[in-house]
Length: 220
Image 1 (cartoon, rainbow, N blue to C red):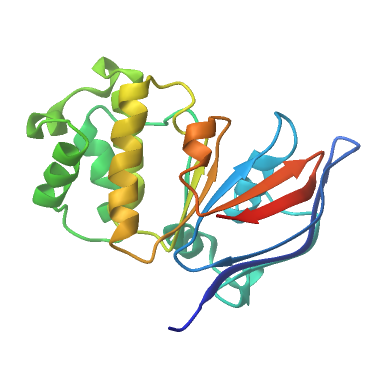
Image 2 (cartoon, rainbow, N blue to C red; image 1 turned 90 degrees about the vertical axis):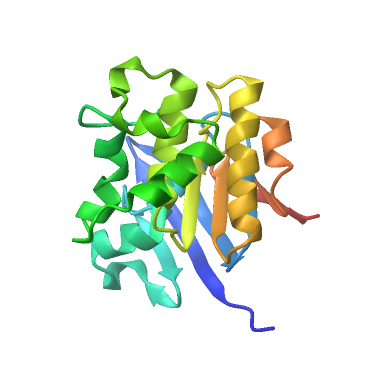
């Protein structure tokens, strides 16, 4: 079995507003791993995820994706391979279809209606939700739509930033069962930030960030 190092972080730091948010982070992530990132609020977990997602830029150190420095990638191409899910789902347009067609539009491809309906049904949303107005959706429904949008074209790395923090237990279970099923049948790598202990236990590796430093790494 060939082990592929999908992400490599060397002495990564982030300094902003006269504060060292991340300090000398070193981490290697293999393709197909499910990594939980834990730690207290304000420790730098979400900042690390946003740097990996190329939403914000590191101020020191190196970040490699598939063996190449992140700076060598075109930003839009990189974000198709390393996809970030926000804590609060960000939907646009007027309907669910407007959101699920977007990944096809940016690739100049025809919308795959059948695949979108299949994914909707797998997260307990009926086919007619394609035409549903987004301003009528509940928080849990919006989050399910947002996650589907991120994986219609399966990324190599999926970054999940507290995506179930505002959801009830039923919606959390729906999302995690679906994502874990996708993960079990692919080589997709997942990095997840969560304060929920049950969510964190889903990872096969847990890392802890305390005051901007990587304090703990354990493999279960």
